[in-house]
Image 1 (tube, rainbow, N blue to C red):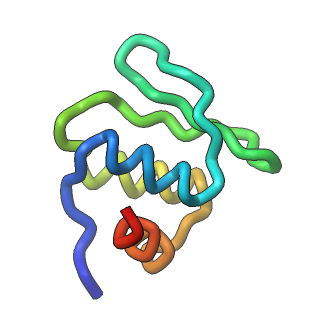
Image 2 (image 1 turned 60 degrees about the vertical axis):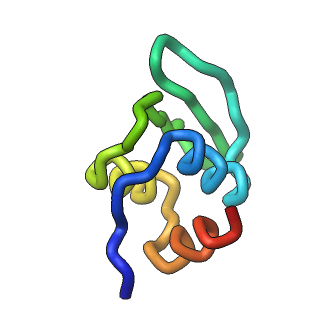
Length: 76
């Protein structure tokens, strides 16, 4: 299984948009997404490279599996 590695915030935002998450807006240096049926928002900091722990936390919040994430990432 491939490892999850650093990714640009724009690419990570595209992954969540492909997963059905809706862009809400930007607050400071963070981009926010929401989806019906989820209480928490997904927040992506605007950094050149997003650390792996932030990616994993957002995947856990969005209830997206590692395999699904890699599938969505390959569609970008």
